[in-house]
Image (cartoon, rainbow, N blue to C red; front, side, top):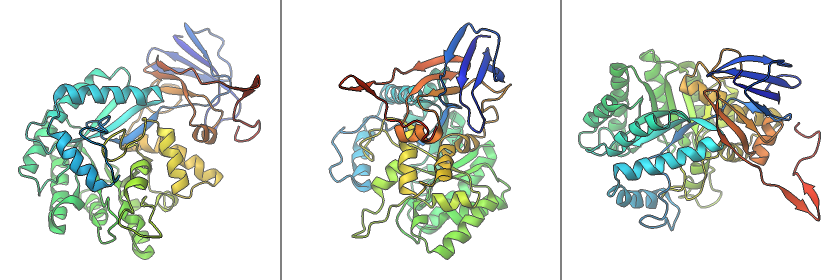
Length: 423
C-alpha cells in the first residue's frame, strides 16, 4: 500500500481503525492492516474525517481588506462602495494570485472542496477567466466549483443575461443569481426564471444569493422552491444566505421550510459574514440575522455552512478555517446541544458534500482517498479547539501538514483537554 493511516478514530464507529490507501483510492478500512505502507501515519486516536467542504466563498475578493481603504463602519453598504473602487483595478494576475493564496490557506486547514462565487457583472469577465485557470492549477490540492455570480443583477445590469451565458460558455460550473438585489420584485422573479432557463440550457446546478436582507418582505426563496418543483430540478438547487427567514413570522417561515424540504433545495448559511452584516439598521434588540439553521435541519432540509469572505471589504477577519465558521454557527444558531453540535460538524462535511453532489466522498473502501487527520479525538472537540489539520490527504497524497503549537506552564504541559470529555 502507498499510505497507511493507523489508529484512526472514525465518525460513528467504535474503536480505532487502520486506513489503507493505494493510488488515489481507499482500499481497506480495518481494525488492523498487516501490510506496511510506503508511508505511514499514526493518527494516535485522533479523528480522521473526509475533508471539509466550503460551499460558499468569494475568491475574487479575498485578501483585499484595506485596499483602497478599510471599512470604517463595518457595514454592507460601505463594503459595496469600497469594492466598487477596488473592482475597477482588478487584473487577471491580481485575482489569480489572491485566490490561490486563499485556497492554500483553506487546504492547509483541511478543506479540499471549495465552491466560489465569481462576479460576472463585468464585460471583460476577467475574474471568471482567472478563476477558470486557478481551478486547473490547484486541482492537485483542491476541487473547485465556479458559480457565475451576477453581483449587480441579471435583469438590472446591462447585458446581464448575455454575460451570464458567456460565463457559462467560458467554464462556470454553476448558475448564480441575486433576485433580492434586482431593482424591483418583478425583476427579481424574472431573474430567477432566467436562472432556470440557463441552468436547463447548459445542464448546470443552481446556487443563488437570495433574501440576504433583514427585510421580512423579501420572499424570493418561496418562488425558488416552487420553481424547482415545477422544473423538476430537485436536488440541484441551493439557496445561499436566506437571512430574511430570520425575520419572517413563524407561520410563514414553517410553511416555507416545508416547501424547501419538498423541493429538496439546499440551504447555505454563512455565519461569519451574516452575524456581522445583518441587523445593522436595528436599535435594540438586534437581530442575529442568520437563517433558521436549527429549524431547517429539524425539518430535514440539507444545510451547509460557508466561509463566504476572507479579509475583504465585507468581512475584515477570517483565515479560511471551516471549524471557525462552524463554531460561530453553533453559538449563534443556539445549537449547543450535544447532538446539535454533531449536526453542525455535518454541515461542514457530509451536508456540503451533498450540495456538491459528490459521490466519491467518505472514508470507505473504494472511495477517493481524500481525508484529514485532525488534532482532536471527536467532532465536538475539533470545533471547540478549532483543531489543526495534522495531515491533509488529497488523491492519496499528503498535501499539507501542521505542527501544533505546544503550551507549558512552569514546565507542565497544558493540553486544554479533559480526559473523558468529548472523547
